[in-house]
Image (tube, rainbow, N blue to C red; front, top):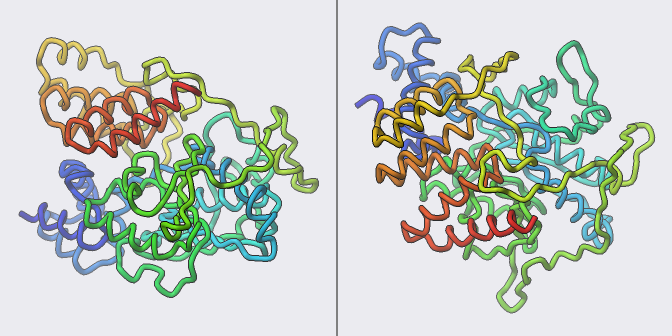
Length: 439
């Protein structure tokens, strides 16, 4: 009873849905916070949760487990740079470019946006970035702008040398970028979210709508729509593109950017891909990122082309290679990597028809290694075989959240959506699969 009340409280205040996050995951987070608060039982913890905003924030942060890093997924930032150099600067040079990042977590995304704009040739007085998160703790970390190695992933880390100073085992962001972002706390699901703010030309709202149920997603998207002017751009997460269909937006058709432009009147309708790209950006394989001698925007980053997928979750070399991370305190990064799960026992159980036992093995592993794409993929297949399509969909969405170009997860999810009657969502996923095959 109390567990259900806590789930209802999370949904009411911040839009987090137990049907998507999983009641088991919420229960584990609640128990961890109860123990951390040294409270004897769940009713006592619930009393604290109702009276302490700080504890409620701690629980929310633990339930969500923000997973972010600089230049996550790359393509949205590549397209943003293209947009600035080929459309914004030639036509609106004298205007201030206004951008919003929500939720901003510990700051990696809005700071990546700032670096992208500087690389594109803008000075900080030519743009304004507002970054919003419901977690005051995350806002404080973002303002501090000191990061560990977990915030830097992949092989393309030239920006780290240009914009960061290493202090012991940490990295301090330079003031040029740090001072370019304005952080504030806010709740995306509230009807008056940023009601006093002027519209933004560009909004980044990636990988948060997937945590919300339909009514909360609709309210959140209404807020975002209100904050965008005609022809404004919005960037969504790869698992959220179905939210924007039939909502007056058109895709910019930049592969894996998941960017959409807001249409005006139907008589003034934009066609897909209308953003004029006059100069194709070419990225130097040997960039020289010297902060005192800035290079042109087209020489700053080396962006590797994605490999063609081969029906294997390990085939996409452009996706981050995630290692299993043992369960630890919130936001604590474990410096030691543990071996990836040996799936053979679970697979053998599944092949022999012992699906419940196989699912239990995967769930046990995920309690300790919540970023394992392979475990979510296998668990999703097991749920699908058992006829638990809702649970299977959640697993495939989490796999895609962690590895956007995972061919197998995309394929399974598209089939599930098609089977459930969500033809629009299935079509979007099929298009993504086709683009992967053509890459």
